[in-house]
Image (cartoon, rainbow, N blue to C red; front, side, top):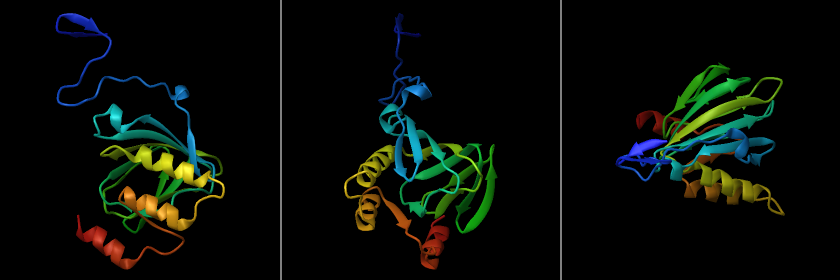
Length: 182
């Protein structure tokens, strides 16, 4: 409970935002899947944080991971809680066991893959918030009958200012542009 204006309140409005104090229990957040068996639980959504960030758990099966991609308007941070990952950031590959934190600034190409023998878990933060809407729409596309084509997924990513590179090396121009924008 918080004391606000000489009265006890169960929620406290944080000065300057539309946020309220929030407590989330992991077990109460339903996971969604989007690629293979990879799943996410969006623990703090943009509307919970006044748009400042999104905070989510991602569970990645052994051998799975993301495509190389970049966010034009969003920074992404990964905290490896369990498992072993390889994370590519700006063209460099990093071994990322549990306890590793990786920061991928906007406009820097990045990707991750679980290189361990069992599912791995990460906590992720994107700033500003809102990535959950992309993943919810992507999940809907991939679970549609028939599943979405690459062009539909690429169009969705573009709406969220995400550029993904499908099964191809990252173009040198994209890496160069990402590095020169820093």
